[in-house]
Image 1 (cartoon, rainbow, N blue to C red):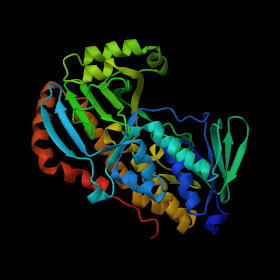
Image 2 (cartoon, rainbow, N blue to C red):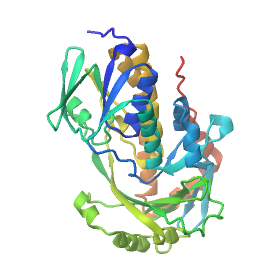
Image 3 (cartoon, rainbow, N blue to C red):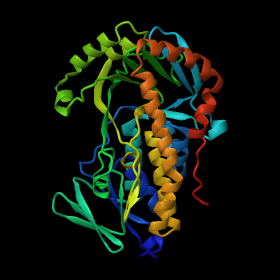
Image 4 (cartoon, rainbow, N blue to C red):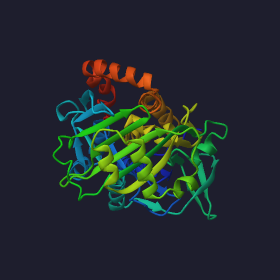
Length: 404
């Protein structure tokens, strides 16, 4: 049965108050739809490492009036520089130009983006309920009832799973569907002490620099306007999935020594950034195989809940923002059943193609044998100068017209 409720009569339940969930709530408000966001944890805005938002993500933020605010906090990224561990330049490509896409890419601390969208949601009076861990939901006619661990419930016209790679909404919606899989990769990242200024005049302030070795990769970029703050990340292969307890047992000093050993002969500033870091973030990387569908009944998934994306794609937050905007637009213009089908038709193939790009990048950057690494370096030095900018074009040029 198709619901005929107008936008202003609808009540959405959003599970997850991360970037995807908060942005969805903002776009639903813009569409005239009321939403309440439920989050399993207390409000957190200080988590996460360095990240970049592509021009496509910036154009979504512009529709919310937040792009210029983000630019004032983050650092513009104009170029993507590739080299090997000895410092040999392999290639350099564009990270997007204002002339072509409206925005360049922007690098920042993930928490800055999350805080920006959460603060805007607060300003607009969107309701958030924290420490509400979803245990399940049931569909009753054209409504959904969400159940939480504390015994409380919430009723709405539909439920939106924005609860990340380990989505509880997805596990209820697709009980026999694909589950998160460990990729065999571990990422460690950090931020360089702002008192360490030796690299500020290196020419890298507006670049993401990716360094490839025979056993993993190391990347860095400036993440802050004004006085620079360098963020970095090291990714390497580890066959056995580390448990949370095993990762938590590592002290920052132990991680520093492990990374210094791993990158002992690598070009500057790899060791220098590790030695002058003020924090270390460690996480295993997971992936979820393509889902058979993003919606069942009165439930729909967005962001990592729908298409968990390797950080090697550099597009996780941008694609989640695209999801939020497109889904809200469809819910504004169509009954739920039509809206979610149109959303999936328009978004699924694109997101899965970007996911594949991330997996392919990881295989080249992290898993290459010495012989494969030499071949990779040779191919990159030939192909990227010829085609690099065009290879990114299909990702960066994507733009949703809210007024259509």
